[in-house]
Image (cartoon, rainbow, N blue to C red):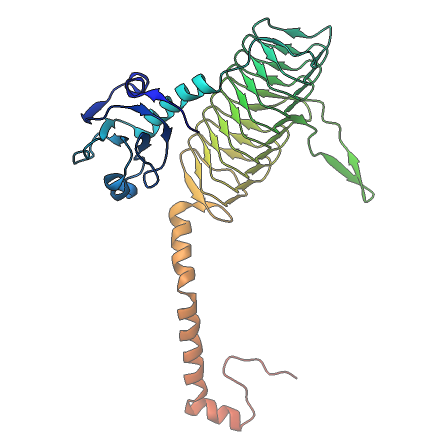
Length: 365
């Protein structure tokens, strides 16, 4: 998007910074290092792109503190401890100014049950449905077409995007973000097979999100069979993630897109799960575990380990296995060469003339 904001505002919102160079004007946009032009802001978040930073035409560059060199004429270097975080703070200011929260109040098309409680400072958008016994906290925003089931709640200053479903008795904490298409409290996948028929097991629990949890678009969290499916404070969940019934996820975890976590699995605090990873049910993932992308986790993982692969194993072992796999063609060629040499040996010819087979083979009667 295009905007017009004074350069001093950037320095005001990012905190600690060292500035070199001269430039006067308005910041009009944010772009990557190669595409940025005059009036635009860019940043160096990964040292592999240092060459692009040195040739960038951006008027303002957010750079690490150890970045060497001087800016071009009409360009400013802003050195900060963490360029990505600094950019994030500026983007938050842009969002606050140009994507303001809607005004408090209830849209005329929204349906609010007489037994629901909506705070005066909350905003309930078009065609939302807030059911009996549901609660919407102070400063919370329900954008549009949001379903809040009976007894469900959305905490203070939480933001719920369009087309989100929050099922019966499910609870969203304070300062949470739920992106479009999120479903909290879909019925868990539970069946008992009897006589070849899959008998449905009712799922009568709920989903509980702690404070400052963020859930990406089209992610689903199943209600518990009984009790709770829970997500701890500060955990961030990406798009297209499936979390099964009675799963318990700790605080400050990162769960990347297309992860699937089967029922009753426990994930402790500060765990990172890479994209397209699958976890079987009823296992325990210890605190601080890191799981590489596209892994298949079939057993519990002790705290602090880094695992990857299918089946998941410690990362060093997986790397060693990959190295050995790359040598398999060479190994097969060597074995085949040894077999051919054995076939040409005098012992093999004598065996063949006497009706014997290849050494090591069983004759077929």
